Image (cartoon, rainbow, N blue to C red):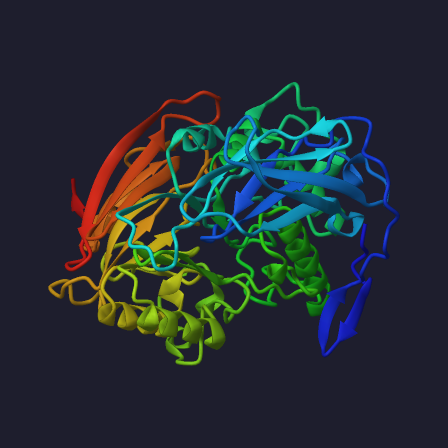
Length: 513
């Protein structure tokens, strides 16, 4: 494992010590594709393909020596791989946890493709992916879903099995892919007697080896593997990929700043290793350029945001608090000046029918305890200057939809430039998706959510069950289905649609369908 002090300093930033080059070896003797396959960030001409070699996924280094392995890949027009259109050989480098990232180009837009990997006699499961429409195309519709917050110890990833069966163009995963806390030998509330995890998993993740093992644990879940293999993902992180409620370089718990930057560097490196992200997203020490834009012809531009890496520390002591003067200081930021300018400028120039903001924390005002209640300082409520800038841009650009995770509840919300004036029309809408598992089985009706609705007329719907939100965009209309499970502490829950809302591009506002 990388020790906490094994850092280099360059330009004032703490960097994880680079691992030395490794020799190339033949393939492992046992199946190395235990973590499945994935694709992500679709372009009109290409997509990122991912896998990671891990013959013993619950062990440090996944049971592999410090050696690189050649891995062949194929992309075909059919699932039998009789019409292969692209192929090549990549390297599963020990320095990057034996992960493989292939940025395939030269594909046709708006097409389904199938892909797989091979190393020696071992062949991976096949995945299906889909390229984005051509940049000059005018698609009639875009089908996508939003998901987030999958604490392994809180239950089974049944929602992902249902996601795999949806016919989607892309899945936006909005953070908390892993959780950093202890995992018992039977997987917490899963109580899986067949699991038998080593004691190492009861350690909180902070080293690179521990993060790699944690991602490997999650990636062995067959339902999560099925969702990754069925549709390309566009992912961003929230806090638990590093530490609960951290803010840029400020940890939640009292540790020396240099130690936390090493911790963050380990977390960011492992995140890139285990996600279908392109090489330009690869981190340099504790810094990782994650925010980006994906285009779906002139129908939609999706802005995948990062509300953790550049934010000011939470105001008023963090948590759910009464407002304080610090909250309203104009220099405080959730996005950071660079990302905020990039987003506002991009929205103004996009020319797309819809602008999707795929991000982490709730943007709508959400009061706890009635109209004069407290606010959550970790959300956009704690950063009113940035929220005003984004909603000001949305007021000038029709078709803004905010996609949110984090909070483990479903909300449908109208977004107003001034939430104190409920008589004013919305400038955008927000879909807050519940968790995959985090929080356990959940409830349909939650009293505190009902109270929030009574005191906040812009909150059109609330629900406390687990699941995801399935969406369809047409040229003029957004439709959102809140899909929920009856339970997650046992496998096999059916899925139902709890509520459906629609919003018009020209007149934003969520209306029950």
